[in-house]
Image (cartoon, rainbow, N blue to C red; front, top):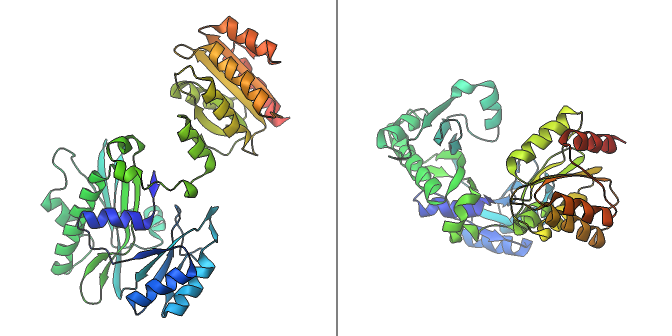
Length: 377
């Protein structure tokens, strides 16, 4: 789960990270009022789950409350990478001397948190990572012991020469790790972390992604989810208990079991097709899940054929067949549907589909080849 910058800053503040004050506005008038309370120059920042906000015109300096209102009126409602801006963060501007990058994420290879820091922070950190990897210092944190003081200093020394800034940055790095752990995050970053002309280290931007598996034990973090700022298909899939990932292909896949789903997508690629999604209906026998899955798949305009690949173990083939038959009554499915059913209650499932006007295969290769052919046609 992604959370907004202002929400990530709340988590950072709770851990002690020095974050400038800021308030959320949903109208230009609110932005003007907030800017008037802060006084001086402020920054008006679009709040969307997307990078590149500055380059897209979603971050603007305002030297007066009236200018803050003008910027907010332009930013609110604009789209950044397909996401509509519904709120802006208004925060006092800072006198920036230097910019750095500090981030921590779960590294799957080492199965531990990995810190990455660079003195070359800012909007082009991705380019730095690609062209100057030596400019990024990395550190694996042993989760048994957490961030140790000497590790924080070692990372901070890659950012500053001034001992005073190193000391401050070391503390911020330790606090960021605490926010990362306390929030059940999979990623937390400050970009940029600045030093001001008065010699203070501050986090003027914040980004955080939360591990969905951690949300059940952190209801206060789960409450931060903004469904208006995520693709409707993802929201629908989550509410239906489905595992769904949107892809760029044209073969809509509905499979039970993550392993079989991955194998199905591999086979689609093998036979010259492109999967449109990863969609796992799970191991339960629930026709409603199948209906929800079909609604999600058919809502994607890129999908040209729908592929069901069901291996009935815990999932019963007749329940999946009932779901498909019921979905065909509720939804006007204009796309070709190819189905593989094999396993528990296979015969009953095939009969239910036949009565509903569908035919089913038992060969995985055969059904995938057919789906790819139909999608191309």
